[in-house]
Length: 247
Image (tube, rainbow, N blue to C red; front, side):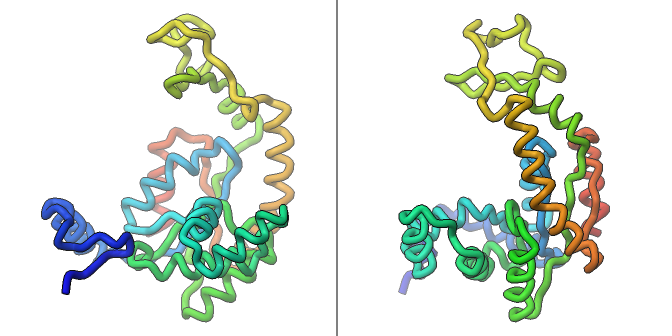
């Protein structure tokens, strides 16, 4: 009988090259140590740049709670149905539900070597619930990577971002300026700033971030799991710091 993957595709229908590539990837991954990571950092701190590199290097799955909730709702899993009911009522999805969805996700083959949690936990209560769930499986969070960066540097990084709306081409007034200020290099069409990329919006987002996450960082610091990365450094140097932290 033909074996079917989670997507319902028969393995017989998967091109040989894809099968071999996946087999080689799994063989390479087999020797990697398991890692369960949490990434914490404000908007613009470089988490989005480092996360795919860590995922690839250590064969981990990337768990962004927003994406997972949407996927659970779309797949109509029992937890997804409950989450949808809460969303339709305009309620927040409970911590227990989110932890349940993470619990489901980390049992998938792609999460066999561990995971990167991004955007969760945001509170100490969520961290405790997550740790309880992992303890039942005989595991724990290995490292919390804290992308520490000065708010003033973030402001410069973010408020300098300009975008060409139709192509998504991005520029930065200081680090990657367009040839003509305010105009796209290719089309000469005007560039825009995202509403979220203004100093006022950033200030309120950072205030909320610090208030919410500092207790979480303190909680994991007591467990000796936190590694503070100097996230203002160039991306390649941050990658090197991450690699040292995960040895």
